Image (cartoon, rainbow, N blue to C red; front, side, top):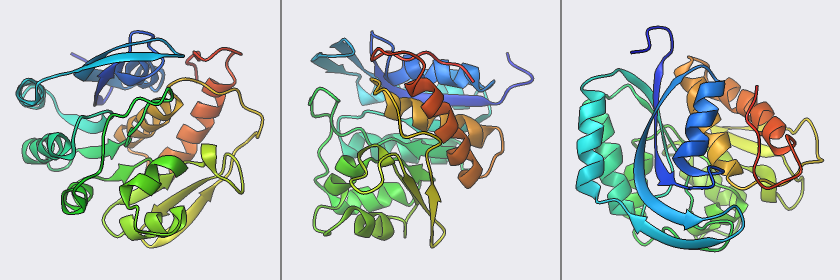
Length: 251
């Protein structure tokens, strides 16, 4: 058992290429000197370029694993990745809050893979709001946020509306006006997080890495703003670590 490092947990899919999902998350946790646990929401067959197939993990199995981990360890923060439905996500979030009300929760709403495989469709806005009220941060990009609240007219409008329920980090990788600039909607204010460089090399799983870096920083007792700022630096180093789709992790 770790006595020096806070415990963090990723609940996400298993990508055998290790560019995304729980393997990428645990690599990120290790670089941040937090001790990472992982619960697998589904097995995938994929490379960094092509998504072939998905096999979801039974929800009961996931919830049993949550129960055992939380009853044996003090988990400070949780990152959630791909899930098959909002009801599946809701059961996970509500179980975490029941087991440990102080644990921070970050949801990276992966609705579609970079190779256009659909994971999750937002069908029930009431359920979505219920979930958001019980988590600390979501990290959508410009494409994902449009699907969270499609009746709104712009990404900024949606972020403002959803931030009434939890904090929103609108990731700037697809920002049509200022590429790479993120906006954190937190406690009725919008905080701009500028990139250190506008020259980046795209990577498979970069959204997973960013959200898990934020989760690790929260577990290290940084506030949300600093956690996002530090994670921004980490993801830029990751993106520019080499010229391939699979990045290297280092601080």
